[in-house]
Length: 165
Ligand SMILES: [Zn+2]
Ligand SMILES: [Zn+2]
Image (tube, rainbow, N blue to C red; front, side, top):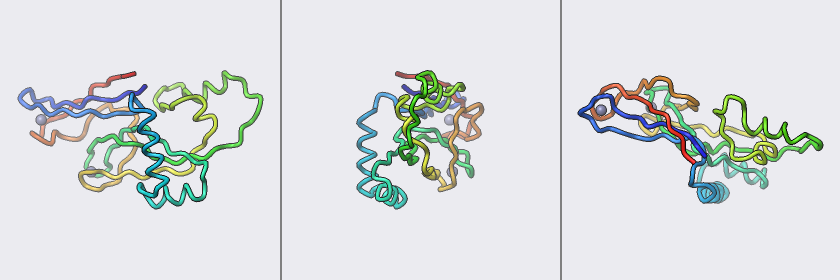
């Protein structure tokens, strides 16, 4: 399951259109296994290579997230790659509590399953950089207004939210 946005140009003569994704979507678990393997093989970053040496039980979050460049406002989506380590499990937590951890009330922080967030905790965030200008990018949970202009015609862009299974 996931959510995302269609970013469309408001100029009726322009056909610019792109999609941003957040969540795992239909590509799990293939993408997850592929990314985990790459990270373990040292193909993602030195931080990930080091992480798996120190934490062989660690996992990376392979779900897509939407990022916004802090320099040029460019929006893009790519796998989070944040690093997680197993946490000590406290026994006797009622199943309701597990569910509330897995699915936060605001519904924005999508997680794969109750198991996942129950057993793992964040170790280190993976930094993201804009593919256009190299600027630092931040996670964008909700797009209210698109500041970025259409790369084809310079008009205002509009975000339409969508959901998929
Ligand atoms: Zn940028
Ligand atoms: Zn346009």
